[in-house]
Image (cartoon, rainbow, N blue to C red; front, side):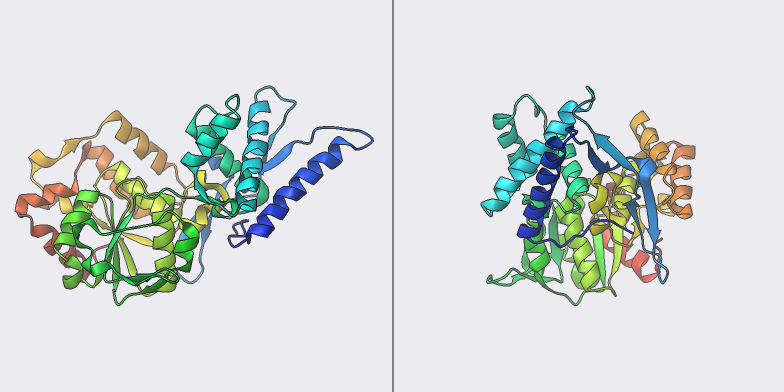
Length: 367
């Protein structure tokens, strides 16, 4: 099972940082002084495992008990060792001040304070996950907000504490912006009479369906992360699916390896998210595009796979968690050497996309 306690108060996270510092100092001033290594849950794919529920087909990725270390005494790990302590120090300050900031803001603060150790955003992102692995807490527990690109629309009412209710059915084609503050998302009061959630890969497709008010024809909620899913969008989707378990969650993505990778991130979580992965997983079904939809698409609209597509396909095929019918779709893409975009359905007219979704949903053509 996942090792992360996902609900920790500020004082609990601060206490864990203080304990980490005290343990470090205790080793340093002992009769046989030493600089203790940091033991972190290993976030490599070799340490990943799959949790499958007994009563349904929900699965998610979690990390096992294999550890990696950060050591000041090893040249190749010394900077990573210091980075962990620098990020913990900064997060401790944020928690004491009861402030919150994004990882981008954290990067610039660290760049100013410790330029020797932080020269790129990726170093901050990686170190934040290592602090999560060390302290067994979530990133929002550290005072770090997610940056969000996500939008939501449809049959949904959202209300933040002490704020007016937002009706997501009247937000127009632009939808309602999803906040990056996971604590706010956790505390939202949510109401819906929808029967489906449609997760949409592309912003333009989301806008088309929201403008056409497809949620009146199909009682649904529309959600998009405008491509590869950010944490806040995944968190809100997970939250809604947990609060309303009768909702069927469906994904509309391009028929290509990248589209399937996006679906799988929503469905299973990601190894890169380490101990937090399960908090963002959701039982998403693949609605379209799929291989049997190619009969609806003109041959000239099909696009040859590129080397990057094949690389993604190879990576997905190696996943233990990937279900067989998804692997079959992936094999078909590779065999044919082709991919298709959702927009190709506009060959039948701009109103066809709504008809396509209604037909697939009514016939339960999702996997």
